[in-house]
Every structure is written in C-alpha cells, then in structure tokens.
Image (cartoon, rainbow, N blue to C red; front, side, top):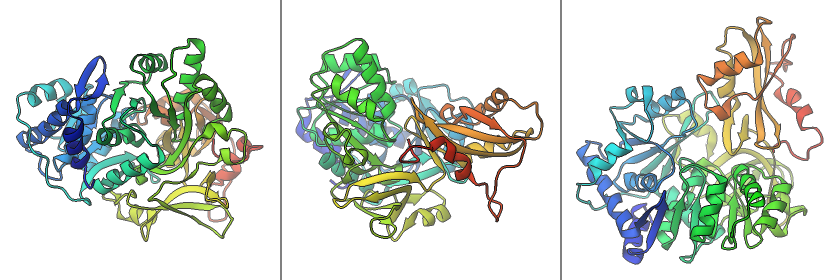
Length: 494
C-alpha cells in the first residue's frame, strides 16, 4: 500500500459485503462505505475544491467522519481534522492558517463561517452527496499531503502537522506489527477521531476487513454495552478512558469476555489503573503505545503490559515498532531527548519553516520528551524538554496559556506548568504576580475561557506578591517553581 486509496480499493475488492461500520444503530458495508468515499471526490468537484486544497472537518465520531477522513485525501485534497474541544478563536486560527475553503461540521459554526468560503452541515453534506455518482479515486503520490493535523504551539500558536499519504500508510503498517489485528476482530472506536489515536485504526481496519463500532462521544457505559452486544475485541483509549471503563465495569459488570486487546496511549498510566483493568478485563492483553501527531502517531509499543505490572520494565513505553528508528540525544546509557526517524515522520509544520527546522534534523524528529534506553532497547520516559503538559491525553503548550493570561490587564507576571493530578495525569497550574490584589482565581480562569479550550484552562492558580524567580538572562526558573509538586516521584511526567 502506498496511498490512502490503496486500503480503500483493497477493502472494496476483498471485503465488499462484510460489515464495515456500526454507528448509532446504522450499519454500513465495505462496498457502501467505499462508494460513499468515491462520491466525496464528486462532491468536492461540484463545490470547486481543487486538487491539494484543504477541507476542514469539525464533528463527533461517526462513519461519515471516517468517510471524509479517507475520502478527502483519496480525492487528492487535504483533510484538516479539527479538535472539537478547542475554543472558537483556536478553531478559526487553524482554518485560516490552513487556508481551508470548506468546513464540514455537525455543529453551529458560529464565527467560523468567516474563516472559510463555505460551511456545510452534515445534513447538507448528505443531501448533496446522495444523488452524485461515485468517481474513481485520484492519482496521488506517496509524498502528497493527506492531512493537516493541528497541535498546540510552543510559541502560542498551534501548528499544522503535515502528514503525507506515505506517513499515514506507514503508520498503518507499523500499527499492524505493534498492535496486530485480524478479520476476526471487531474494533471499538472510542478516542476522538480528530486525534491521531482516534483515527489510528481506520485504515488498518479497512485494509483487513475489520468491522469498526464507533462511539460518537465517549461514554463508558455505552462502550461496555457495545462491547457486550457486538462482541468487540480490541480498542485504543487514553488512560482517563481506561480508568472510566474499569470503574463502570466494576459498578455494573457486562459480558466483556470478547475483549482481547486494550491499547492505551497519549500519556502515562497509573499502575493501579493497570491492575484494575487486568482484573475487570482478564482476557485482554494490555498494550502501551507511545507516539506523537508528528509521527502519525506510533513510535513504540509495550506488549502484554499486564504481565509486567510492578516490574522495572513495566515502567517503559516499549520498543520501537518495526520500521521506526529511535535514538537518545545523549551519551550512551544517559537520559536525553528522544529522536525518531522513519517513513511515518511528518513532512514538517505548515507555513512554519523555522519551527520545522527546529523539529526535524537530518530526518530525525525531536520529540521534546526526555528518556533513556535500557540494554534491550526499551524506552523509558522521565521528563519533557518541551514546555508542555499532557492532561487527559490532550497536549497543552504552556506558552499558549501564558499568552492568554498576559492579556488580562491585572496580570503583571505569569508562568504555567503541569502538576500531578490523580484523574487527568497532569493539570494546568499558573503562578501569577498580579498588578492588582483584586484579581481572583475565578476571574482569571473565566477570562481564559473565552480564548482557550476547556482542557487548557488553569485548574489552579497561585498568586505571589514578589516577582517570579529568574535566571541571569532573565528567564523564569519554571523548573524551580515546578519541582516541589513533583517531589518524591521517580519521573517529572504523570
């Protein structure tokens, strides 16, 4: 397979009459799905969206989301999946930065209509798509841009990660090696499909003829009911979702004996959650996946994590997937920045040559994570070089939050960093020197809410009367402020 049209064509040829998707009671065969994907090309022609142009997608998980995720790049255009948890200014920036002409959404677009030439609701999309004839997929090349995946920015603005057809197909093959599935599986899609984790399974399952049961919005009880009804056997979730599934299963057990593989990633997972997951889903292998949007996303995997609970190796994120190279930017045996190379590594950041040059070095992607390798090549993460927080599986770049906080007229100085949180892994914490003593935590958080998605909001604010500690060149000593919160932990990520 070379481009996204290849797994689609394979699915049509080999699995046509099999069930491909179940979503909200709707059942779609592979033939029906591929035909609709081919109609996407016809629709984009009708709407005068030219080859290579960008199409924004803002919607909940669904089979229609999957057809646009596949159909837009298979038609020679570029899909721009948008984070549904972002605030309007963040979404508008991504659409305008991408130069998207069209936005397809299942929600009121609000001011986003000003950022594109045309907005289609999903009902309008359906009305326009239905009467069209399917069109052969476009002739695309491996290095053609398939998707722009926006992620937080180290300079306050989000960055469009350029993933090519080659990147996404390589990740599909890497996933099959690290997270092997078969046509006997039924895959439960629970993570948001605008994330690399949520869409990770789509192409893999299409190529292998695997039915995907899609959860529009995560609900642990609904997920467990679907597992029982459809005999789902595999899924990929973030740790907070795994914890919620465990709790819901403990409270009201269902027959989940069909589950043989529970993968998780996006942030570290607590040992106690793993213990309980193994108790509640005893037939399931636990698999820890590590990656990044920039690596499309898979880098490493730790198989049979349930057998390693309480061991030193159980604290690792596994070994690189076959086809992925990994090295540590430090002396042998020492901790340093994790670098990744492979056909899955992004082309760069859209319209950001300086940030691209900083992130890519002779084909190696600088992850911003600090780690080390043991003698058998297992990767252990201990800290982050990037000024970033991972809360509930979502990346929060501290500079984005700081930039908004500084816009408040009562703020003199501010810094933001992550502190441990039992439920979300980490939470956003701000330290502020106010201009006026009347500034309150509630006032500051409400101010941020207008510009930032909910998961980026500070959950706690510390006010100081003296200026923040700084280095000789005047840089805030964030690690000094952060250190007390992580005291006693063996790593500075959670």
